[in-house]
Image (cartoon, rainbow, N blue to C red; front, side, top):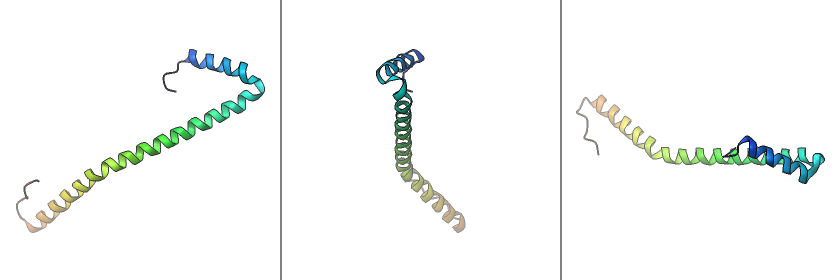
Length: 83
């Protein structure tokens, strides 16, 4: 939960209880939980997409080098110099 410690969470809970009252507090806590879950899901999806975008050029280069090595091995020739 970020940089919040138990003391800060307790203060927030007491303030929420005073402001919202015991009737509305469970519903508000549920909504906050859903919002946090949604934000984490969005954040995880964004991180995965960014990682995939960064990995694509590396994977393409590795695939190209692997295909070149297989081709050279079949031909029995010397390895080509790296570019």
